[in-house]
Image 1 (cartoon, rainbow over the protein chains, first blue to last red):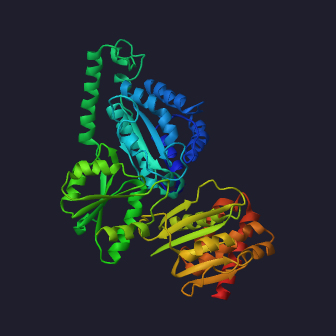
Image 2 (cartoon, chains in turn green, purple):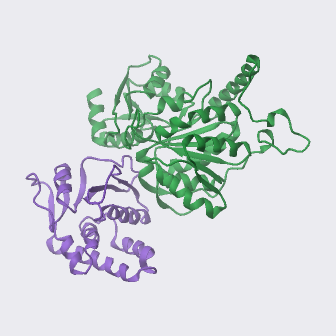
Length: 352
Length: 182
């Protein structure tokens, strides 16, 4: 690890992506992730990379598809409405089985909404997002360091399973600064010969034709079956989560991700000082979802409280995971209003 | 030990920089820090604020309602955030353009210093934020003056040595004034 640098989340994830070997970045500006675009515009030419401000979000995601098909580490980023526009391309990338990284620094919605931090794209992110039968792995960081660490991890997962990977952070994490250290190592690039377009002298197979159109139903069925075999592998290997203060055997456990989780940690610390023990389970991968870890956290609890910066999306996955083992209650804020630790501490006391 | 600092002022008064210099100094001292600006549709002449946390332990929430320190460079910030100061909090008030606290708050320590006028005295109105930073560091000790000096020297020492000196002078005067009043 190198020295610590005070950076915005948007800048840290950009620098980490470059250090992870990303040399092709295509985007269209939108707040609150513009520092990411700005950083790439400044840095990419210095590392002989390509920065391209596309004419639209749709163009940017298709440039990512094209670059990924050529075997390079490619990335795009946007914020909620812009990510909606990219969904067609993300579905195509998933169908073509190409590795790519997409960063969504979310904002308030629906519609044009506002630029405040809101985690309201959970459903879109965890259910594929675009049309068709597919999923994308989703990483949800909670600190600037984790946001940076997720860039190389996203490329690794993308290449290991040949899938687009989404990093879902909110505007608060994009805008705030924290100390960050970058790892020295770059993830080892995967042998491209089994997925990238040629020229593969003498060993070119139909696999090197990048395509998502399979007009014969049986052909598409087979492609989809393979896709879902891969998803089973991802579920087996890539689930990530964190627990906090669970060793205190708390009767109430909070489930929260991203910014809501870190604010909850402060509330838990404050309550601990008053002698009240509360636990936290924080999904880091939103898909695949850490259902077993959530079920385990719920097994010793009297109640689970789901806290989200939306009107209740992750709560559905929590309810599926808890499966009636204890009551699950929900508290959310919409519009980009963020809970403070004081809010959450009061909320927990009320629910206990 | 955790210090939650809120700095507010007009856009252009350099409140974000106060928070950034505190955060950088804290980081250099091996502390845990967060810096969160208000990033709404702010404009020049509008209000801006920044929440900074300096802590011995990892920082959970970068956002808070109640603060340990409020630096109000303009009156609207004092009016908006003053009532949220914790018991025993320090409120640094820019006496050059702020009125009184909106509430009677006997449990806080309000210190009035004319940051803007003092900056004018050293020939740069824009250094009012640095006068305030000097007072903040002097009265809280949340980071060492030396750490900020090192950081500023790194940023300005070679490229703009006269600006570095002026900023240091502004901080020294802010600290001196704070000592006098303490």
